[in-house]
Length: 385
Image (cartoon, rainbow, N blue to C red):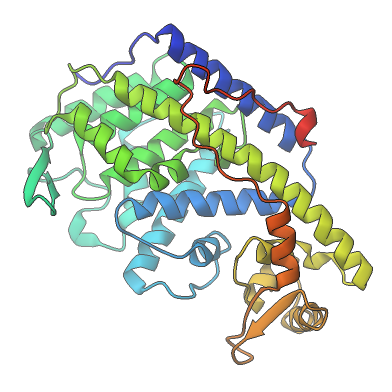
């Protein structure tokens, strides 16, 4: 027996409808995107990777997360941290490829393969294999075990049941199916390590298969990373220290709906911000006579990312020589500030770019959509053109 999706309450259906309205607005905004969309897409993927790993104590800078997405070298990450980051990037890249695969189906083999891709750098943790023995989650602050996974002999049967439920035809909304899939995997705890990351990855895959919106924008991994204590708390409340699929887990469903609501709000805000910042910098580069191939990198710098020559070269698709010349021009015009020697030179956005960013900045909303009267009206499609 595994966790089964509950019947939604009227207030949960209302929040779900509001989330869907925001997602439709976001879908419209990116359906015929300009060049700015590439910046938004890769930084969104970088945030998902960075924040999902951070929940497990695998911390990289936002610059290194973006470097992973761009297949660049890290700036500061240590070897083991970088290997874990690259592993998660590879898994998420494959998940995004599966989003519109017409021959797709869930299987234990797929889940185990994703797990292998994720932690293949750490063979003692049995990548791609179910755990061979018992497993405990320990709270080091309390010096006690707070969760015990099911007996290892039960894992294959529970995973087979999970896969069967994922492939079943159902009218349950995708956001709810994804939340239940996440909960089942994390509570079965089938692997020796990486169970949380795999559960979040599975949730993103279920959402991506929905194909309502571009796959990177359906994930709530960034939200879970930013509110990791709330995430731990609700899992602890539902888990009660062991695998209890018979318990009421509506608190988990509502936590996920809040996460989707806030994440969709953040993405709408970033969509507006990215378009406005892009447009201002585009006019600025035209005024200075700088080739617009510099736009994506300059927008990255405005958003606070550090720039290397390899970053610029990959973004603009130019040679080393052209990249060096373009970066020098951006420095000479006061748009970038460079530090370090030639080979390891790092560039940051100048006060001019920072001022453009802050002029267009919108604070992230942390509205609780279940509070009476707290729901703001979702922005219209016209408002974010």
